Structures are given as structure tokens and as C-alpha cells.
Image (cartoon, rainbow, N blue to C red; front, side, top):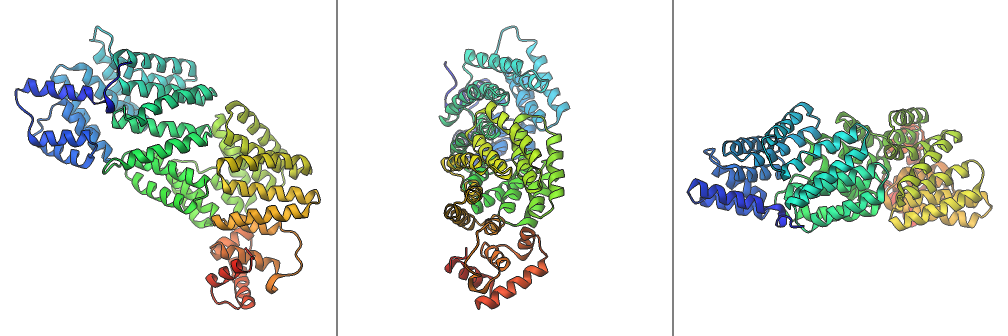
Length: 568
């Protein structure tokens, strides 16, 4: 297949030369500088030079396209759209309908995806009308097939959606258009993923990523492909690919001076990966930066997801008030903060609210992959509130989805859920088989927190089978991981299932020992009160008693004492 030159730039360069020749004049030094900066992806320099060169409004279509690209990559979405509209009209004035159609596509498609249906449809319809005057087949018809892919899928016809995307890819190959080929395969692969043809879809998306990582595409298409493929991997619980492509996206972003477009989404993806691997402070910082970068963008969905990630990380770290605030902001931006908010209610000791929240979310969700995100929380909440039948129903459905999508991550989730359920229903031997399988998978995936939670359940199963030595060993390993991660709520839960001790260490009561472990993990009095379901006043009294018994005068000193004497 003879596709465009690297970066998808050959058509732009050719058009620039043609316009320069038609104008009968050599381009200015400023314009040449802007073109060079754009080719080298120095976006701020390109924007500055091209904007200055455009001071009299005399830039031709190809250079206006470059200016629009620079504005877009700097995060100036509205300005980029306005410049594209000017380029569209410039091409029409010059009689270059097909290039005008391309700009109509790049104006209309983002509007559709951001929910501006009327304006987006209007621009795409204009593109279709302009092509009616073209007698020959052309690659622009392939671009205008892409909106139909999403329309077919939305109307419940994934087969037609995949076939339409394949037709667009055929046109791209015929006319040697690398950008359209990547966009078409990206759309086709996404449709296949969402409709349980996972291996086929992933193979197509891997092919797309070869073009993206080899720098064969224009910058905007490269970013779209990166973000779309990574999001698809997360959607089908394909953790290893998501991690690999997120690292590649990070490198791509870092190579471009002043880049703002796609970097917020990149940070969200990085936060997700870091969270799984236990680097919670780094993940929280990435999610915070993502929220800042996306705050003024048109991508409200990504901004909301950044706040949801912050809520998840703060919940895991026992910062329950901070989690509540982050979930609230995610909801304000249009993101349903589940299952995190339901699990937060459980951590706050409000089991009734947790049950209501997770079941309401499930009742509103029909897509299997989205239900798979919620069902593990339904199992956990149902078991915590004494409803094994509801947990079993959720676990059975989760197993069915896992069998359909064949994800290693989903298999680990299912194994943990099944083991927890069997343990609650009084079959520790069967539970242990599932839990050991889950822990092995977490180890292979590099997920320490999820592995530690599984080890707590393994300890309970061992204890139920009379093996107290194994139970103690598993609990110690799990609690060490919780302490290292900074997970005070889980640390307290791990302490609450510890076996009988020879006597209260250092004169501390069991409750005071639980409080000390949470203090050592960095939890505030409010977080401790929520974790242990007691009042802040009671927590403060326990803390003062701990200080007195240990002979210390600060929380830092108490935490140091706890670590030094193996109390944490």
C-alpha cells in the first residue's frame, strides 16, 4: 500500500507549493518559519509565526490548515475550529472542493463527538453535498463514511458499522491515505471490541498502533488513535496492552514542545496504570494535573474522569472527605462516579446507602462491559451487608461476561469474587482454590493492592481450615503491603481479622492498636472514625491514650514507634 509520507504531510506540502506557484510569489520568511516549526512539531513557534503571517488574513488553505493544527495541539480548540472554517471557505473560493470537504469533516466530526449534534451534522452534510458534484471516486468519501460507523453502532447494527469502517479502509488503501486508513481501522477495531470479538478487534488495533508509533500519521490522527486504542483496551480490561500503549503515548507527548492536546487524557491513562501498580501518590499527582489541563478544554468527559480517578485514589488512601469531593466534581461534569461512590459509602459505614447506590447504577446499565465495572463492587457490598444471594447473582453474571471477553484482568476479578463468595457461604476449601488463582493472577499483572486484598481472604480461608500459621503469614504479608501503599482502611480491616495474641502489646487495647495502625498509615482522625465506624471524639481519646502509653507526643512519633516495634 503506498501511503502518505511519515506524518501524513505529503499532501499538505504539495498543496502549499501549488498555492505558492499559483500566487506567483515566494512565501515570506515568516511563513517558511511557521511551516518548518509545524513540520518539527514545535507548536508554539508554529502558532506564533503562522498567526503573525496571517495578520492580514491572506494565508491560503494549506497554511490555514497548519495554523489550525498548531492551535489545536496547543489546546485552543475553538480557535482551531474557526481557522478550519476559514480554510474550508478558502478552498471553496479556489475551486478545491475535495480539500474543502476534508475540513468540513474535521469541523463536523469533533462537534458530533462532543455532543453538538446539529452543528456537527450540518458540517458533515455540507461535505456530502459538495461531493455530489464529484463524478469520480475519491478518498474524501471514505472520510465521510466514518460518521456512519458510529450511527450504525448506535442504532444497534454493529455488523453494518464494522463493514462501513472496512469500506473506508479500502478507500484509504486505494488512494494511499495513511490517516484515513488508521481512523477506519481504529473505528472498526473499537466496534469489534465492544461486541465481544475481542481478539479480532485487538489485532486490528495493534496494526493501527504500528502506524502511530512509526510516525506515519499526522499529529492529530496520531493522538486520536493513541487515546482511542488505550481507552478501548481499558474498556475490555486489557491491562497489559493499555500499559504498553500508554507508555508509548507518554513518550510521544514528551517529544512535542508545548503540546497540550491529548496530554490530559494521557495523564488520566497514566494515573489508571500507576494506580493498579500501587504507585498511588504518583497516580494522584497525574490525575490532579489531568484535571487542571482538561479544566478549560472541550473534553468534559475526560476532565470528569480525571476527578473520578482522584476520588478512587483518595478513597483507597483513606482520605474519605477528599474522595467525596472528587466524586462530586466528577458527577458535576457528567460522569457517574460508580462504583467508587458506593464503595465510599461502605467505607463510611453506611451499608444501606452503598447497596442503594450500586444497585441503582446496575439498573441503569445494560452494556456487559460497563456492568463488569460495577459487578465486583456489588459482590463486595452484598457480602459486607449480609446478602450472599445477591453476591452470587452478581458473581455469576461477572463470570459470564469474563467468558465472553477473555480478559486476564477480568479472570482475576472473577476468581477473587468467587473465592470471597464461597468463603462467606462456608466452603473455605473451595474458596482457597479460587483465591490462590486470583492472587497468582494479581502477581502476574503487578497489582499489589488487589493481591493484598486477596491475601486477606486467603488468610480467612486458611484459618477456617485450622491452619493458623498460614493465616498469620498471609495476614502479615497483606498488612505489610497495605502499610507500604498507604491504605489505612484496609490496614484496619487486616488488623481486625488478626488471630488471638499473647497479650496487648505495650499496654494497648485491640481498638487502640487499630487506631495506631491507621495513624501510622497517615490517616486523619476523621478518616479513622469513618474506617472504624466510631466518632471523631472517640478517636481523639484513643490517640491521647496511645500517646500516654507509648510515651510519645506526636502522631509522627507514634507512627515511628509502631513501625520500629513491628506493630504495623
